[in-house]
Amino acid sequence: MVLRGWYSETQWSPGKSDFHGRTGGKHDGLDLYAPVGTPIYASIDGTITYQEDPTGYGHRIFLEGNYKGQKYFLMYCHLSEYVTGEVKAGDPIGKTGQTGNANGQAAKMAHLHFEVRKAKMSKPSFSPLTEIPELGRAVNINPNQTTQTGT
Image: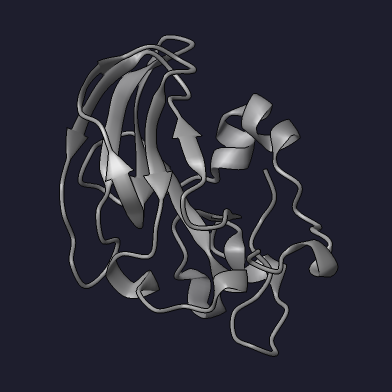
């Protein structure tokens, strides 16, 4: 997994894809580069529910489950396909898309918006890369500009 770098046809800014990486700290998750149609998988065992947000996150799902004794709500956004119900870690749960405010973005800007929350409808107050050390080791925060082409 790598942070998305392209924010327009000409602006390369991977730092904006990180938690609180935008002006005023307004980004509450991670934007992970993923061409439309990329399969996504459950990170933990749990239950998936769906909640649409047409003008923001688009088609989004929440995966409610436990990680090391703590309850979390993992939010996957801008999806083109998704499942609901009980899942196990590693199960396919959907595919990336361009719904919500990602609609119509250039292919090289395609991404999965991912958040880790401690309550379903509250904004996260922590970075998922530090809260879940395995995630921090799995995400490349310094992506290669030439590999994010959208093809």
